[in-house]
Amino acid sequence: MIYTNGKTMSASLLNSKSELSIIGAFQLVQDNVTDLMGELKIDGLSTKKNYNAMWVISKNRVHFKKMPFWNDDVAVESFISNKSLAKLTIDTIVRDENGEECLCARTELCALDIATGKIKKIAQVGVGENIEKHDSAENIQFGHFDNTLSNKLETCEVRSTNIDYLHHCNNIEYLRFILNVYMEKSLHNIKEMEMVYANQSFEGEKLDVYKSSNGNIDHVYLKRGNDFVIKSEIVR
Image (cartoon, rainbow, N blue to C red; front, side, top):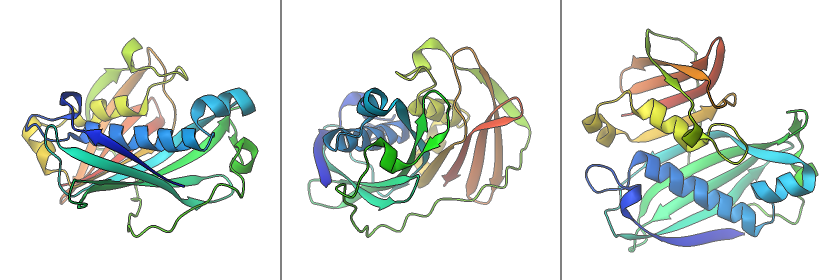
């Protein structure tokens, strides 16, 4: 199944240039992935109810090609591009009214047993042979992280408004913690961004923010004590 949804660039999705923001782009991707899974009856609420399991995004990488402007109409298309024993990969493409790509993304998900926190096979949470995958023309490669830490930039706290229906910090909220270490003008130069979700975090926990740079590539890490929570790669 290829799921396509029309969206208008509303004010809440925009940056200081009245274009789609980095956070808005990740929101578009996450929402459309969720809607696709809802159409397939394997969304988070269905999985929790039927299998006592939850889907978590393990990786999400977005390539930004051109940002649509305020009130522009776009088509957001998502489809399963790969299935393995324990992982589901979904590609998302956003196109403008002329059919030109604005951005493309690759999202990797796995399912966890709510009681034990252990990874479940996707076949155990409703992803059978009836759920088809489609070949993707996008060449999106996930990054490699050496976990090298520079000086700590700041510490942020997971607060009540960061929490989602699974009672952990929502994926989009981590973006705010990371992007807030940049000056506003620098955000307009980001060409690619990847988020790797290593661990969950919960209300009241404090996350230390580290940043290292190599040429036009930055790695920003969120750590809780000795544990990595988020690893991110930003290409400028």
